[in-house]
Length: 365
Image 1 (cartoon, one colour):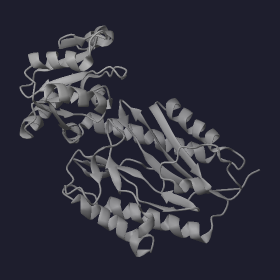
Image 2 (cartoon, rainbow, N blue to C red):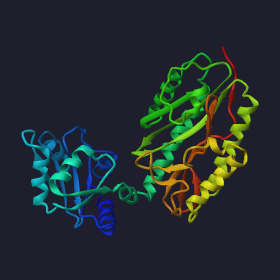
Image 3 (cartoon, rainbow, N blue to C red):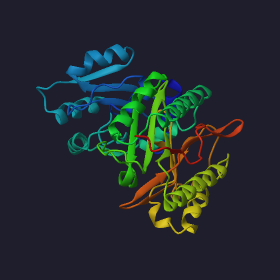
Image 4 (cartoon, rainbow, N blue to C red):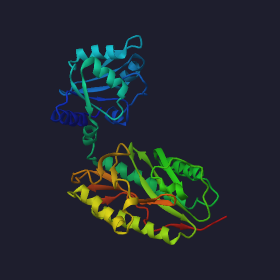
């Protein structure tokens, strides 16, 4: 269990007037205790009280498994023969939490919370910002793992350029990328490979389109190394790109580099997005840049700090995040150039080293 992070969370919780925080099975729970049980409809989670006391509440089918991990933590158990809300009501009464204000993490099941709240008079509130704040500043070891994770994606992108050829399915290329990340030491690999019109969908999930002799392919992929995430986006052009494609790519590349140049310790986050977005808006494509500029990254692929106009915060040493402006033209194509950026003791560091130059591969049969 990460005591220093728990202690920070307790401080944040008290500042917000919460009586406890509930962390249900999730990446957030795994970060804190190194383990996350399977989540089903049976209510369970770790409670951290404002005095630092911790207990885990779960159904009996999970008790033995949880005890192996939390052998020095109290485990409170309820059983299938009981009504969940009644059982939890009684257990939380013994903990002095009736009528309490309890923060919950991102995976807490609403249908369980509703029944518990009605029975016990508990007010459940959003504690995700506190859980993000707890880990927003990366340690030196975490930063080094982020570097290695980013380097794995750089190697894979270099390899996949030589693998692509017309006639392949998106799925073949995606499988290559996923396998290569594992071969280079990455874990939990994920990948988006979007070609042609599919590249205009920011979170495209398909994989059936065939790569054509003159095509555009958007890559967005990452993995973990020592549980720290990577996330990179690059473009590949099969055959000579059109003049419109060249123009849009240059705008996106320039926007990314302008945003990265605006990142330094103390920089005001909304100003970073304004600078990057202005490149796209001044070129006449502002309406096609529909996403935030970036998101924090670390133990989770998306965490604090969001790099967007509505986040009035300054960058601090130890923060890591993406810069990923994009232009998505409906019915045509989309483009994005994304890097992970870290604010370190030595200044701003771009963790991804893959080139931003346009990559064009020949139309090989």
